[in-house]
Amino acid sequence: MRSKVVAAEMATAAGIATTIGNGRRPEAVAALLEGRGRRESGAGTYFPPREARYSSFKLWLKYAKPARGLLIVDAGAARALRDGSASLLPVGIVEVLGEFDAGDAVEIAARPDGESSVAAPLAKGICNYSAAELKRVAGLKSEAVRQVLPRATEEAVHRDYLVLD
Image (cartoon, helix red, strand yellow):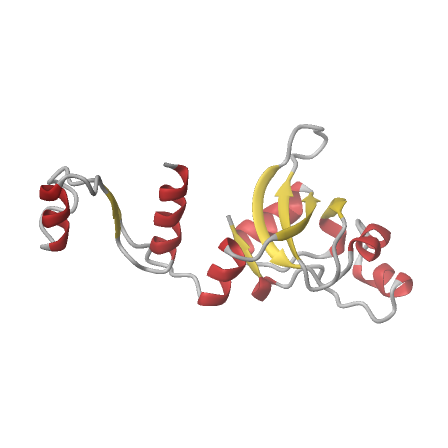
């Protein structure tokens, strides 16, 4: 069932209304094909389309591109990503897990300040640094990052290449 719900989530993120129903009940299939009673007929579970649709790139990134690593961010970075549509800067990264190259996808998770609890999933994005580079500059402000890696970009993950969970 999880795979069906994930498929419905993908479709609704693309702006497509979706119903999960029992295909072995001919009356349910007929009701859906005729467009009758999406919600009220009991033909299945209806998922309305999202108003804010993802671009095809962000759909690919979220659902098809495998993540090669995990970045744990502090509460300030999590807030900036979630509320401000900001890019992820190295200063907000508190931990780098996994081995990945620049250009690979990474999961981004938030851990509440001062806690060693499990981090909550937050986003997925294309990283501008390799894991080894990011481990060297995690937690550093932009000016310090340029001293360690002179040709580095300012963003670890640019907001155009990031999709929130």
